[in-house]
Amino acid sequence: MKKMITFAAAFGLMASMGTAAFADADNSAAEQAASPVTGTSTTVVQPTKLFDEPLIQPGDLSKENNEPIVISKITPFFADPNGRILNFLSPQVVYSTGKHVTDVNGDGQWVEIYTWLGTAWLHIPEAV
Figure 1 (cartoon, rainbow, N blue to C red):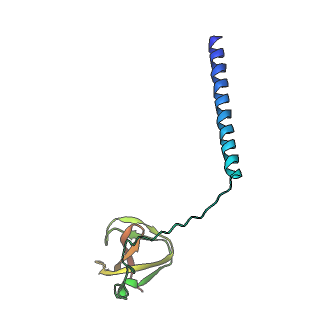
Figure 2: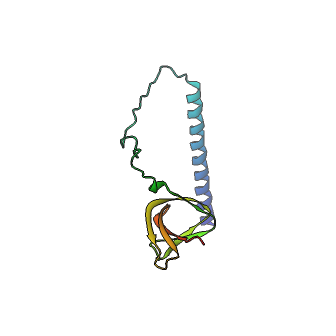
């Protein structure tokens, strides 16, 4: 019986504290809305330059670096030529870094590309 009375008293105390907190919040909001705002304010913010603009100069990219490769089916890409598979690419256009390696079997070439995991290698089979 003592536990129930203690629980009821604690619960009643918490409820009254919560009601008082909400009542204070409502009164302060009403007071703020009623008081007029006068004066002016001016904020001037100068942006901080972290880098010189532009980051990539027109001569930085050679024609080879912009070589688009059109992928028409789901294709694996690799960590190294003849290395382990990192992941797969869905059909899309990807761009070469300009590095090419001839396949040791002679049935195509390896091309380094840019991916969301960094650079990786694609195997491009030789056209028949």
